[in-house]
Image (cartoon, rainbow over all chains, first blue to last red; front, side):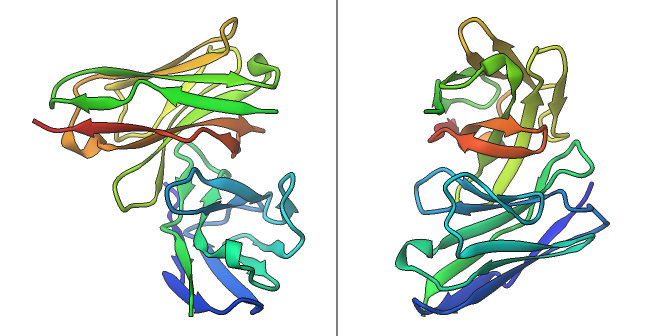
Length: 108
Length: 118
């Protein structure tokens, strides 16, 4: 099973800041990585797939990069609606499909 | 518009059974795999099971293999998750999600709560 590790667990930031979230895979997963955003009490929303492709309707301030074992999600200018929990998920070697533990982006 | 709507959650005793349903619309249902993902209270996301578009092949997490059964009915555009031998650790919100390219969950329902308690 591929283990996904996200860091930091919590990130405190202010609106307008550029933030970077990290996700590491326990073995190479190529570019088979997705990022999801989940707000409290809501379903997750797909942001990025294949490491760097934005899903339908996702603003350009969200970008993803990386391959192999190291990946990042960058929010270029944090908006108030971006405070949420972010999960990465690998799909290179499954079952199982595995998620990281999440990074909570909170207001500083 | 793509819509996914779960139902069937509730409170059950340990050892009991439950069947979750997921009604989908707005896309060619048989062309997509469908999955269930759960979230235990205060925890992260956990993939549970996936069924292919035809329904012929299913996949399960080790934690649920042998107790959970995923199936689908393409004419009614519905996916099911039969849960048997319920355990306290099955308590979670269960999300149904369209599975794009066998890899990513691109549309999610709002989830249905399953609580296992005596």
